[in-house]
Length: 465
Image (cartoon, rainbow, N blue to C red; front, top):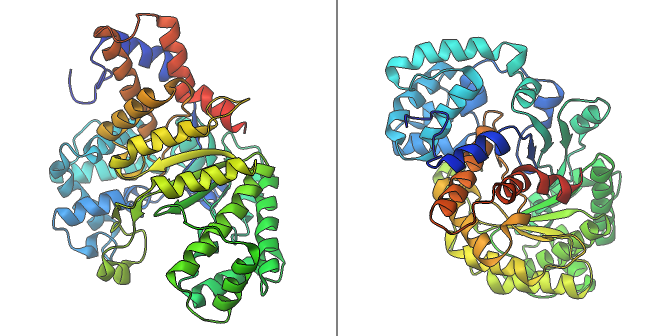
């Protein structure tokens, strides 16, 4: 088997059959990503590989820094060609990092380039890929068609007026593009001035005064309604962990008023307010039959110097070691008691929490639909082969893999869709290994159905876009 040939990762004949016949032909439902709806609405034509491949990619930025590349060539003022040269020089040093596979998969799947990226091939690859990027096949919408992406769910702030989603909703693009409600700034009250500015922006977008707590909640509900009207059916929260403690509306109102007056809330007040808001959002989701996503565990922006120099999402986040079980159980348990627990997907970024999240999902399953509470795919630092295998194994041991809604990109790049192929190959490889070692029966009908369900059909049924 040679590097990235048609059967890479597929060591058994059955794995190859499952992938090529059942998985590979399927479309993609990308139910969580960070693509720009503006780029899709305007059908952006990217000028060069740096624009589409390196800008905003904190995975590559981390590798570049680890290789000793100066920040000028990562997020700084260097030219697009100079930044690409830096990545080409770094790529051979990423052997055994998933970036090496992803880089060359993307060169092959989008540009039909099979050369290895290195300093000696950089100019040729740059010229060939840039020429292809000027074709309609590799515009933003062209890429989505090429990769058989049927649904894209972007990640959007409630204060965003969603003008690009409104434009897309008036068209009939081959890929359905839907907003996802990400209201994390609604409980970011540690910095009163920033919170107040965000509330003002929210109020303008919702056409609702947000000076009072009641007005603030009304504005959020109006925006939730607006997302729903544009086809949004998911919310998302990125937290270190769920908030602890119960907070009634009177206490939440008092904390809101304190923050709006410019006072900094203490740690307990931040927890209580966050807790109250998370219950508020869950009720909105449940009322509209949405799916809630909980991304838990990262410790963000740990390099204060880089944060000041570059800003957030610069590649200086890490896996946090926050205790998850008690707070998550309390949150889901209260929602279940009050009959307002929506469909929920749990994602952990700390691999030590695999079995915590896997067992937590099983605590709150209920019909009539299967797999109401999902243990989500390997996320962020875990969306590589070892992380995916560990997540699939934990879910298989603790729940029902057969109802898993499968992979997503969680990416800002239009070139990330081969990650679905990567996941599908890994899944088929694992099933082939299990049959070869007698762990699963050699029932092709069972296995084909499992592959189709996990790679596509479960997501189509679960989200109901």
